[in-house]
Length: 94
Image (cartoon, rainbow, N blue to C red; front, side, top):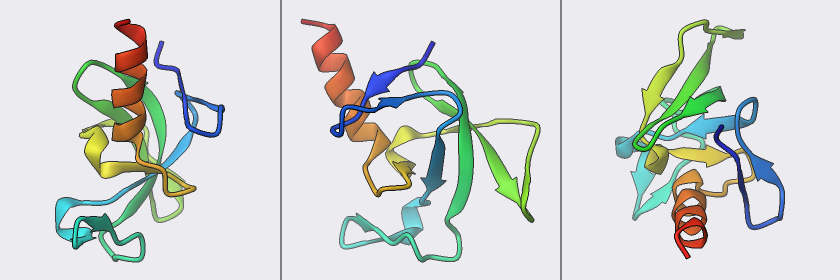
């Protein structure tokens, strides 16, 4: 099961809402959340390399989850999911 704590002390895992920011939507290394290519979704599961997300298309959550690079996922508060995974793995491996 994919669960970790974010910097606010909340758990992050299946069922949490995220925003996908494609590589071309970064400006000066920072995500542009207003870019038209950004997509909203809900975390379904995770594995070592990808987070599986059910994306919302035309207001409907899609049934098939897509493998997504965590470096392109952010919580709705703007926090990077990739950074959270890096912190989680460092704590877990101590």
